[in-house]
Length: 560
Image (cartoon, rainbow, N blue to C red):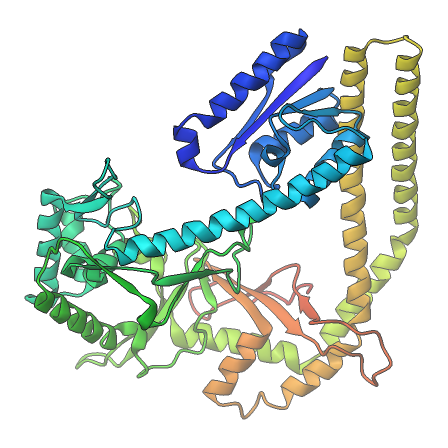
């Protein structure tokens, strides 16, 4: 039989102690005793992954092999190595059973007998209980070690080295002389010379010192951490943070995006102070803290003297970074000048090797161009309604073609299903061998997945057309609400309107792309239409406007 082996360890310490190798030793001995066929590609392992989650690389590879029919028998040491939660165990075993794959647990064999199934449920519940108990014991043990004055965490701050626990001596920090000299130098620059973080970065990036990672240049976050962490004054704090799920998780972060990854400070009375070797005296650290607060109060980001209409809306087309407003005061030979500048021009703060080549944009010109464009669009809702009518007509004209294409997709999927059934019948009649069956079924599965993706994409586009048709009647009402405030709007009101209807403005060398988002009310006028939760009308193309003077001529409004 074609055998697959699976083993898992939860922590890096178990990996270092080679407990996963001991699992594979037992599993390979069972395979050798039964004279089964084992390919190296069918040995799956997960090192450092918890059994309370299903998104494990080794487990995903095993499930793919079972789905493709490449494996007939799976051997695991015990059910808790496959999954810690009983619900996950049942899900995986049922998935393997439907695929015709047998699962064997060497330490706790499970069959279809009701007694064995009951035993599996009890084992799953015990595994979940053990995981909760271990987590609680680990947490309380760390707190007790911190109260006893032991430093927790294997990664030492810059300026220190961590010495692991050895026999009766607990893990502790020792001073790294070379890094400590640089830390004291940074505190001298901050306190004695009253430098800002930016000025310190300039000094570091022009000097011989490199960060611990070895990459140049230095990051402002690393420098600020060195100058603000109380560990350098001789006190490290444990039990300082709670880890909570992010309120706004970033996109495309995979299955870990909703994990508890954001730090949240606990009340000060819950912190546990741990004594460590000090690199600077407490008085110098207090003066550094006061200087950082003074630098923050004088920072440009706290400047409220100037207002910019397009703040937080502009993006540089060349480098992709945001643009910010900058004002040059009046001089004897020229008046005050206001510009929007790309963040990419600052190589120090962005840690980039070269500055962005884009030119500064005059604030008056770009603000006038954007406001006139948006005001003209909202003052004439007929253009938006006409565009939706054109979209509806196009969708209706394509209905016949869509039906024909959908029918063709369904026919091809049915043909693949019949071909798969014929392959199974041929295998049962000994007309083809197992290898040929697996190869052909794998090819059919790839074709089926491709057709299903096409069908899902067509369904998504069809749903978008339906939603666009539903919200069409709200456009006139939205434009009417906004247009009454356009003529006499103050700067604050203009900012609010632009933040409401513009998603992003991309500034190029000779182009200005305005990407719109039109917020609509949740219910249709009159209250009898269908309900739309958080409806928004987004542009699927870009409006090209132009800046007066050096940019191209203003192009006609294109499709929303």
